[in-house]
Image (cartoon, rainbow, N blue to C red; front, top):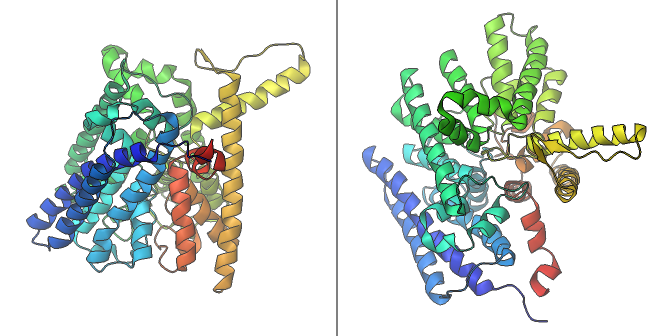
Length: 488
């Protein structure tokens, strides 16, 4: 049977993406030059990306538009190739093996923040900058950023965006998808600049301010220190907490708030998802605060640790202000539950996303009401908007598939780890939840002050795949694995 997917057009778009991506290596080149570090790994990586992109573009020259079917292939294969090219500096600098480099690169671009590098401070500044930059690029979305700057990708742009960021319909801030993306990009840049300036005021160096801004707003979690955010001052930790909340908020709200001027605050207050987001953060922080009072008698210290860690885990940033491995079972259970929530739709956060959780709660409440009033027609609303039954079905299916993949991933990881000596169940379960939700740290051997270096290579490959699946929100990957996608 003939292929129904236009592979040629798909690869042509990926080639354009790789050509654009090659320019990203210019920034670590500049950092390496400024600090007197070796340049050739960065220049060689740039050359490989440019040569590969140019070669594929010449071989697949076409003017055909991208359809929804091709968009899945562009997004799925595009993210894999970006992670593969992005791992080259780790290998050429002699820092990591190929599999470890792929793990680190995928963790960066998917904004997971799980690392296999044991001694962060011993690495070159250009490499640490590249780790941070990869998360900043991945936070907005590789394809989304490319559409914003490349005219060729504007054709079929909505299909690409919907394949990269599936779920509820993307909010339009402008008549054309490219203008909407550019608007959100301006918000992303403005917030990034704001965080850099505020961190500088708290006494953080320019280099670390930029690096942590990249990984905070992207809700990524890669840092410049082995002990994450712990070495920084309490004031800096509070600032980072605030910007993690920002990173987990729908960026469209900031734009609409800016347009409203005097009504900036009311835009957020009227948004039902944002209210649910803040209420969940506050409730979880309070529960964790009560749990930590016996460990940290100082109220400010307990409040700072609890708030920071709740925000970090729920927004899937993955920073740590202390080693929460030392906390009790109740605190760990709260953090594990938060790994499945994520931030708002339209944010850089991963996991299930709060809007889906909110709609699931509304569905449950509707079922309870209909037990009492069987003939009643009860629409489900999100704010003033009625959510279609088709969209609600999609939310439920996503949640079921997400939990199923989490369960299967946990079983596979446990089987693999038992082969080399075994590991405690909470450690394996948290590692899978963290990878699939793009969170970063887990418990035990993959805890916040540890790393994933001790895991066998097969386990690292499994977790790498889960990061990729989680970042693309599962269904684009599942579609690519079905026979009907290729054969019709």
